[in-house]
Image (cartoon, rainbow, N blue to C red):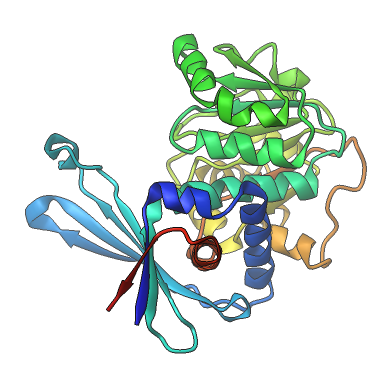
Length: 331
């Protein structure tokens, strides 16, 4: 039995952003067709260490993808020089059940999450979109930026952090890697002047209050809500949820049970549940319309799912083998 081992750098090198976007589209379509088996996440408390071990299994037979992402949440780890939330992806062969790949799960998560925004932007944003606003400069921000630049000819990308120096530092750290796309990257600490300009907005934060003014969003804008993934988190303003002409999600179950910025507007009576209960996979399958004119405001909300980990993880293994990336170990 041969086992492929991929570290974070090797995971990144295995697939380019457009391949990840297409893999996420495939995963969304198969999920919406009911051709996946994604059990509930298992959560084990490790009380002596004050940690948690989470297991996210999934099977997507149409993509020949099977595996489990293992995430640990150990708040005391940084004091030991270790990451607080390490993640590992285990990829299995659907024909034999053997483990065939083990890879850095943190980088996989960044890639597949960025790919979701790229997929939604590709399907829903105006074709001539030129101005992008990225809200948040954390660990997910680089892949979120690149995914949008990969699918639209963006001229100006505003990068927001409340602290101007952090926004500037992020821009400096990614400028070289993003240079091929030709967009001007502008760090900002005030969203007031730039939200009305935006053709595309991506929010990727852990906020508990809305991060921008939804009344300032112009007609025709597309919005990606990526960061708020618990009922307590809210980054999208309720008025934009109400104003949006079309709302699509990655998975209905995930968003309606986990996304505070969708749960609260429903609870407050601002929007009907039916407005939010539409999956982007249904658009990809031709079951629902996407953008129908350049004045519509479209919104995509994601909370993530193991379906994306197993499909993208499977493809990373295939691409890595083809490129000779990683370490092959005989077991």
